[in-house]
Length: 165
Image (cartoon, rainbow, N blue to C red; front, side, top):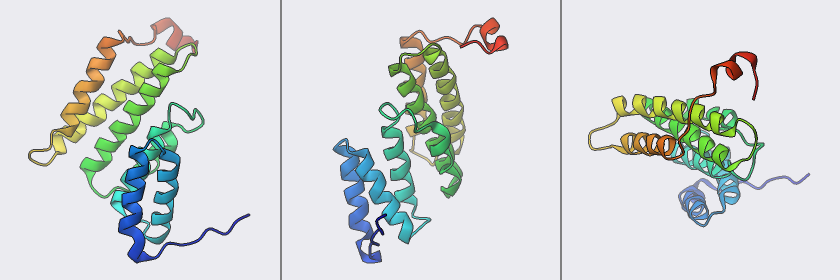
């Protein structure tokens, strides 16, 4: 195996800029790798954690093996309660969007459930938000519109009771 090389502390701000740029260039795997390099030097680097969460969720649609539970495991490392709630909502919302793109029995029911979880997280974040920060409201509205626009519904009760998907 290869022995990974370490970044210098002085390089962390520029490395973070690069990670954010690679996310914008639709290269989330590269952004994720850079975030891991930053976190190897500074494990509690909040912006690197957030960028890592976003880079991983960017890959949900293409990488079915990468699931919400793996990314949700990063949430406790975020320092603020608002951030923990807001980014948990982002993870659920993005996983729901990925489910809408997949074609398997029950995918839309799974998406509905995940959107509901996102709505709950965004409602919690809204209650904790700093003045002038309405991001959680914007995301809540987006999820509500996606549920309505796709006419998503809960799993029929008889299927849920019998574990049918």
